Image 1 (cartoon, rainbow, N blue to C red):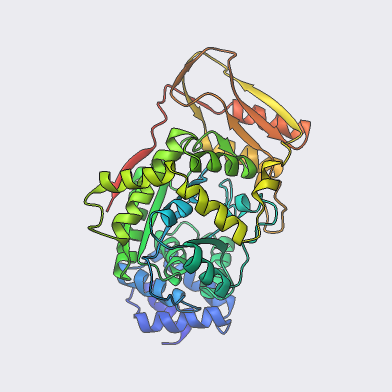
Image 2: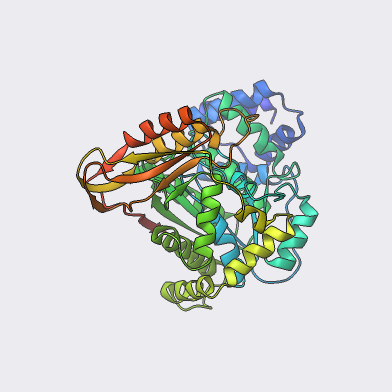
Length: 428
């Protein structure tokens, strides 16, 4: 099938074979299919949709447009993917915890996207931390330490890099089949035994409604399962930020608190839920049931095993935790107080994310430099009765004006009469 025939078939709703999608994705990755034809096909797929078989075929084709990692025999391999949130530092705790529980965790992560934070940006707030390791070194570290965290290399799913950029410029981002193929082509290239999804829903998520989140979760799990990977998805609330801290350095500090057995309850609980899912998907039968798996993970979090793995990972990738602990705070602090009395449900996650982004904590273009020290620190837990004028949190800013503007935006976004619930539903 010629590319023009492929475009016409998708446009007209006719079935496209996996073989034709393979040739198309290979051409996209190599550059032999021009951008205007890729864009035309993306628009056809966005408008007409793809069947589940076509989505699976596209995912595998995009995966195979580059390197698929080959692993030596050893402990089971597992990873997690979040669809993006505010204050979401879960990967920083989860990856070393899963390694401490006996899994190998090859975590290939991303940078900030829109109002949501990026795991790589958080890690790079640690002086010296290298998240751009060559693929061979990454594999060696996962085999030796049980965990490593890097960004996507040029070798992995090159068709996805091209198609992702074109989706952004052709307004075809919000297609569930295309979202699934993009996420899974990279994650399946890791060649793990298990893959767990944290699908966010709410004000600060890309999926605003539970119906959309359920559709995405079900599609991700079916496609990953169809590719032979053990999988589960949790749908979790992103109405307000996860934990107390939002911002790169602040989130790493909070993640270390959790790794040391403390930290906010919501971060700890969600981490244990996801770690248990990774265990049950990669080593079914070893822990009896979910509560047994969660108890095992909880012990590894509390006995220092997970923190030891985190420290080992950071050191192996050039990071200096002692230097991180000595980093100065942002130069400007601005309080945010309650505008009324009542049951405080936290701040609107989208508004917090955009406020932190506006101070340099996120990007507006790919070339923007991240300011790691800025962010939001919530002092009063969601679900707390407060009085008007009570201090709810602090904005950490790089300049007085930026901090004041962010404080005004965050302060106007308070959620009231809400209990701040986290876990919405587990989807197998």
